[in-house]
Image 1: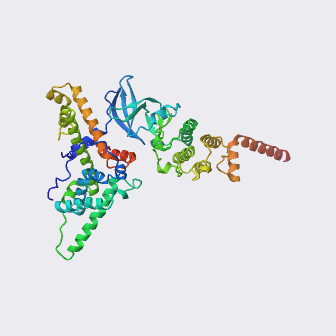
Image 2: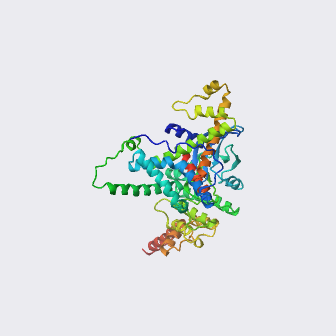
Image 3: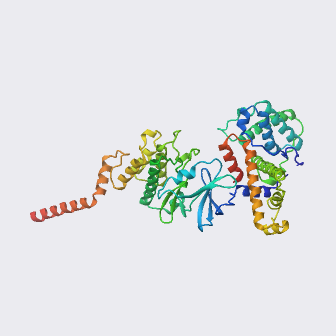
Length: 275
Length: 231
């Protein structure tokens, strides 16, 4: 048996397609490739709606059960999990229409919008960590921004995932602090250039090579971000005096203007009386 | 360029559930592991040598045979480290080193003799590098073997009609018949045609996986190789 190039290409294509016979889904098109498998859009014939169908490559990874246990607005809900006739595991989940984080940034969102995204990712992480789940592969491609600004963290990690180099913590066995490293890398990725030194310091602290030097948990990371947003000093940065004064001035601008106006008025009255 | 050899073209054996390459090596089944490797890689290695070193059919065959004989002698599998590369990449690099040494030795003998003309016709026509040809032939061989396995399996379990439908549709050169045309030709409902095709493709996929499992060193490499095969 000899196969021509065109027949070989056809066989490669049809062998890769998931066999959905006997399921309630009709295949539409491939929409992405994750750490453990391929994601397709499909139509659920029973409920007449479109879903995202993730078909896992090989070994059952428990990924569906892992995600189904997490109920959070920033974690995509799983509708159903099962096994295809060809032996591959699959699960159906909500189909998100929106943009991946890296594509979303091309729309030039404001700094406040960028920080809100990281905040939402951090909340989802904190929730997952409280349930003993670690993401393991935080990166822009795994964060989706919906049409109404909703944020979803995708591709929750399983043991086989080693992470993506630019966003991966350097240590071997991963734990919650490895996710904090990824969150810091994500913050660095979304920040415009140049960025405020306090935010750069938060990023640097989250991404320290030594896990013990990072934030102890995600809430501590978020608390430092909140301090920045409220114009307070962040823990990650021992700021110089001039910067502290400038921040004080920015936070109390109205009060300072009133004080200046009062002082000016007093001087004015003083001079008018004198002359 | 003269025609390719017919060696290494068929694999008539229905595959049993295969041990991974490392399992086979570890359990003193090196010769069996080498058999599997030769079944899948003989042609890719032969084509790679032909293109990379501009060898004619006979020289390329000799070099290919020589490579596998040396691999058997020199404990080739024991030096494979799955942490560093896939088995496919390891084997291609080993072939390249082996053939380059042989090629250099042959050149030393010929130095001062006649001018050697290099035939680059085929490479120029296909536009593919020898490395791409090696990968392409690896894919082709895997699917050829899987189709042979599917035919044998269909015969064994009385599903010749399923195989005929698969052959008429998925192995068709040029324009494929429609499902309706196949249904009318074989006197079947159209849903049976799609079901038969789904069965055949599912089986073919599993045979490809089985063949791959025998030449990879664990599920992670198997997964990566499958992705490479499908993408």
